Length: 165
Image (cartoon, rainbow, N blue to C red; front, side, top):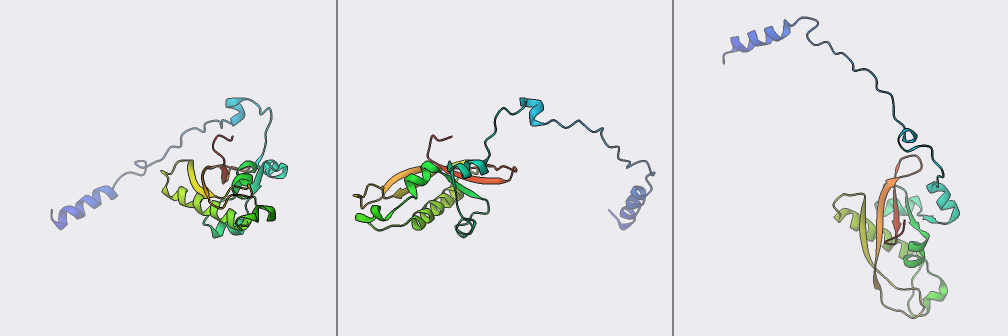
């Protein structure tokens, strides 16, 4: 191809009429709401209400960010009781504290998410010392990390025991 052909091709494109590239917007479609599809909400239970009721335990923004989370994180009360909660009475055989146990849960959750297939949930495997006052060794347990919409449709992470809703 010669320079003359390139120039004449460019000239032909530039010589298109003013209507050649006119864009015609498509007619607006009416918005469909969730209520249009499923009907009115009978009862709603917000994440904020679940935290206020103690059903969920919110993780502090600072520690969540330090562990690598960019979204709000909360644990179900049952997951918190099993893997994080710790009192001085639990320190008869081994010394631990809630802050360290929470860090372990967050770190292993982040690790599991990074290794997952990118779906909305993943299984978290970790070892934790049971709160029986007798155990010294960690026992394997599993948690479920789920990313879903928060109260304002923002992404949030909820860590629960397997089988919890």
